[in-house]
Amino acid sequence: MQPKSYRVFKWVMYALVTLLLCAFHAMFFSNIRVLGLAPFLYPMLPAMAAMFEGPRQGAVFALVLGALCDLLVPAPFRGFFAIIFPVIAALSGGIASRLQSRGFLCALIVSSLGLLTTGAFRMLVQVLAGGQYLGLMARITLGEALLTLPALLIVLPLYRAIFRRCGADY
Image (cartoon, rainbow, N blue to C red):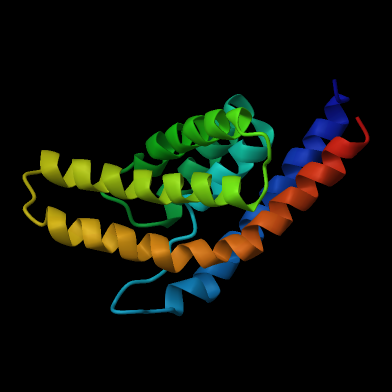
């Protein structure tokens, strides 16, 4: 069991890196356009945290990140990210706990899961609202996922460094 101050330090580091990645997304990723689509980094972040920290702690992290995203990022309704991000974290943490290695392949799986789950939830909201453009939304979801997955090369080393550094001493 880690001392309380050490756990606080670990989660402060996760928060700082996540804010850095959100700023990076706002400055760079939001300006990238390929066929009218832009990368969408946010669903990848709770998936990566849950991959390293487990479904329970990852879900708490995801809830806080979701609330922050609900304040700053356009969504189909208020609370969208606060609902979907803990679901992503629980799924990702569960999958990662069953895999032997938490390396690149696991990160690719959970990141893809996060991106596709967010898109599927957007499509569900669209269906419930009586929307008609599900094919278009599916193409947008797949396009955003393909554009976002290369960011895994940035996100994975940062989260892995926090996990290794803050978990090595205890």
